[in-house]
Amino acid sequence: MDRIIINGGINLNGRVKVSAAKNSVLPIIAASLLCPDECFLEDVPFLDDVEVICSVLDSIGASINVIKGLNKISIKADNINSTEPPYDLVRKMRASFLVMGPLLSRFGRVKISLPGGCNIGTRPIDLHLKGLSALGAEVSLGHGYVEAICNKLKGCKIYLDFPSVGATENIIMAAVLADGETTIQNAAEEPEVVDLSNFLNSMGANIVGAGTDTIKILGVKDLKGTTHQVIPDRIEAGTYMAAAAITQGDVFVENVILEHVRPVIAKLQEAGVTVIEGQNKVRVISRGLPRAVDIKTMPYPGFPTDMQAQFMALMSIARGTSIITETVFENRFMHITELKRMGADIKVDGRSAVVEGRNRLTGAKVKATDLRAGASLVLAGLVAEGITEVFDIHHLDRGYVDIVGKLRGLGAKIDRVGE
Image 1 (cartoon, rainbow, N blue to C red):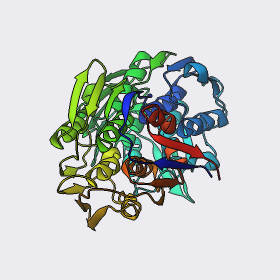
Image 2 (image 1 turned 30 degrees about the horizontal axis):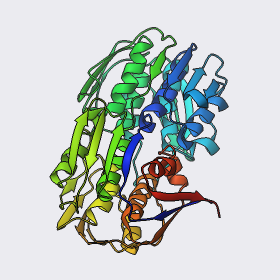
Image 3 (image 1 turned 30 degrees about the vertical axis):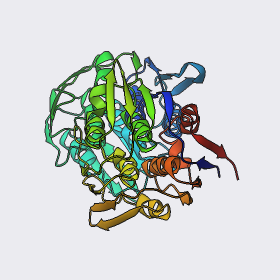
């Protein structure tokens, strides 16, 4: 297994370009199952998760053409021969469950194993199943599988008990070919939901309200092929912004939609970090240790849970005491043990972590327990004295395109090595 080795203490400087959004491209690839025509996706981030979702589609008969040099993928789902994706692929990644809505809507049947993914919490699928049942599907669970069948889905009103991104996306994809109008209340407002809706509308769907808490989908008879450019990854952007702040650097983060990173910008500024906004880019300048700030993760447009671990690394060297409260996932503090190995002073009280800022962190051998935990350990390693070795970095490969190369381009002393 590979590991990342970091010699900390370097102030990052320069420019880094953000790749397209992992959490946007995955549902969009799944949505291409809704029509037999060819769909073209541009600015695709070639991550492990993208490879898995493409393998899921390939396993049921879709034709996938990957052009890595141009960051493009074409998908043609005109010869689907199964509505039961194989367990060995689905178990690798939770987002595989997003093929359920498209397969059910187009073919009237789907059987899929319960999903896998990062161990950051239970993330139940009940909201997905509640939505599909409301649309008229007959849903059953047993032996580790979910099966849904229908003659024809019918539009209805659906209220989500929690604004789940995955459930919102699955319901949208199921509803675009249903009879009549579907209304999703308390829908997720994340930019990735908007990007999926824009992709579907370009295929001929009729979706309004994406980006608000009420989304209306008027079912259409069929969809057509399209070309779509995936939005930039707001979490990758936030990670490099935090990297500039933690290293007291001066970094231009390019290919950013500013509205998508407003919560991160606000908290960095509150911490005393200078953030200068430009056209699709931000410049982050940090001089001296940041001030401690309190953070509470919330669904969009609140502070993103996917940035909590990175900010905890930043707060571990801040002046003062910060309280970080996690409200989205109940098991997302696993990185704390590893940060403490590097000298961080963090105490957990239920769903809150009390972080006492320290003047310095020290290098250590640590392991990534999930995707964003891995990013937080890399950030801590960038500022720590001595050598930090980050193990289990396959988690990072799920969500960051060449994080080592991009940080090295900013001056970091960082390498990826095999055992």
